[in-house]
Length: 200
Length: 79
Image 1: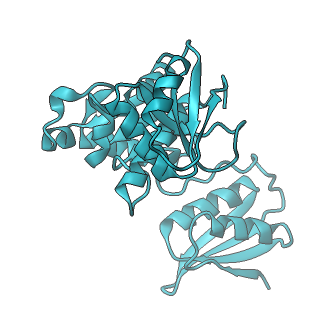
Image 2: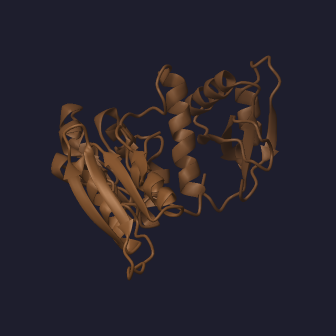
């Protein structure tokens, strides 16, 4: 009788974690999942442990019959699990969706944002990319209270991308003072490829 | 105010006073910048106003109408 792991409804990478844990104490297990990503991730983990995997879609779930094969050897240490588009090695991206930090009181939010950007400028580590959209673009134009801090951060190698549509909307295109005008294609790629998204 | 010259920070009891002080100093033509209070001075999650040390007396005069207590400290090289 195989150990049954019901991983339906669980988000990646939990099915993989549960299956791997069960395999440590059993020669054969059955893992029930409810999506193809989980099938692929659990199968990849099982293969990396030298197991044979049979997959059967039974309607109420996708069943993975996993057994340690007699001659099977772990072929490799478990590789990082890909969860959809998550890429842990991707860039650290700071998202400035407004010119305030948090929401509720704009005066306080403005003070907090200035304080944050200053602190990022003073810190040893830096984001790989800073992307500005909606009222966030006001931070990257002439007269912005954080312009010097952004220039400092850019001089350390951070890319600064500013939404062109937003600059136009606020009639600030000519006032851009740091970074480059960007578009939604680039911003979308950035958001989806980020290893870490930081949104103040 | 540059990073190479000596700077001082003005520390207030509330964020409101710091915001007010920054506005008063700006109107008085005194260059300033609101920054987090350096960790070596306080662990509070507070903000202060950084000025060039040469402007200390001008700043004090500009802020003389503030009844609440506030103080000036040298700005440490690294907070």
